[in-house]
Length: 126
Image 1 (cartoon, rainbow, N blue to C red):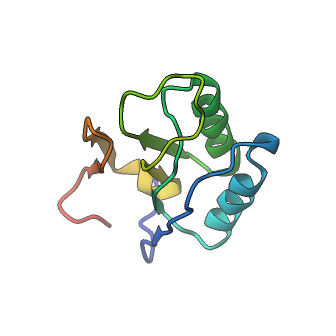
Image 2 (image 1 turned 120 degrees about the vertical axis):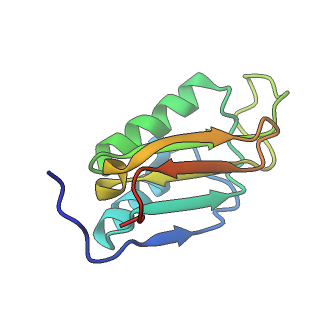
Image 3 (image 1 turned 135 degrees about the vertical axis):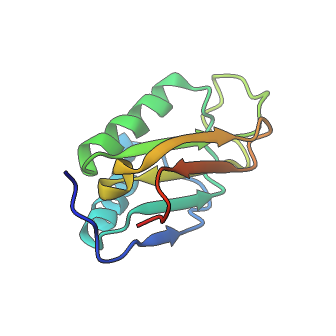
């Protein structure tokens, strides 16, 4: 049974694009900071990531799973960009980790890539 946390931390940061070069080095450092400061949910507008690019999406998913206990990432972006374009305007991402995942019930995305809604089980969030 997961112990009830004392607090729940949400971090909102506009990364103005996530650099996908060098095996996501800067992104991985930020994931370590997320764990260090016990952030349960990290919200990112303006990721500029083409989620249709399987390799980039897989690299990001692997990084989140490696750096965050029970970590999960949700990505969405404006449709219509070909796979060979790893960078594109806009997009949002949500990363959840730790005790947050014990109540996670799923996510829904806008088909235009403008928002992500995450749902949680329970009467009270925590």
